[in-house]
Length: 219
Image 1: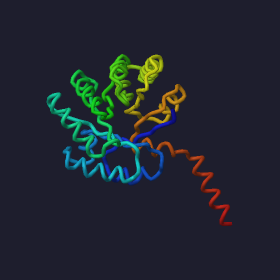
Image 2: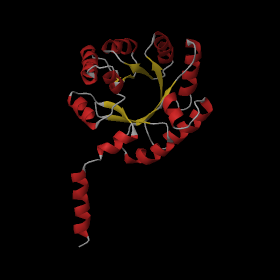
Image 3: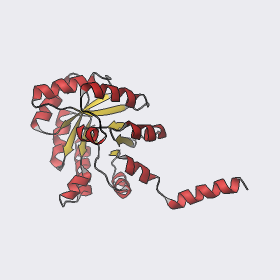
Image 4: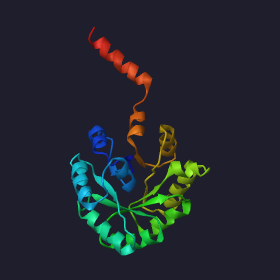
């Protein structure tokens, strides 16, 4: 597998800034990111945002389904997937209700990402159902006083041991060092916010060398 990065943002200004870089396979969003970006969480608005995001040439757009019941969540997931068939991945929480809805959506050929993964054993649910991704929240696991990186690496080992095609989509990363350690351990799929994307280019020595090249080229 090759490195697969997603931009974790629901702000079209961030998409405009970062998607032309070619770094990102896709975009991940959720109702919380929509609220932070001042975007209403409605099917009508998500249809507009989906057209904007996909126009940047990304492969996948991940949208979170919602609903007070399994039936409502399934209906929402179907509506989201219909916005751009084959390019929308429906996000569901890795709960009993989420698993029931995932089974139905997968049966319709709709790809699914399980979100809000906190425990290594939860990847077994993803492997059993055959979703496309499961997203552990690295930073929030660490906030619980645990070694989040060790837990995420254990999740990856479980999937590898099962020879499961499920991709671990690591979310809630906060430092470039976390990316470096996890890729060295064999993980290859991450969703990162615009601040972390900028930090990937934050090497003063590289910028100084680039500035020197430009200066020498004009003298």
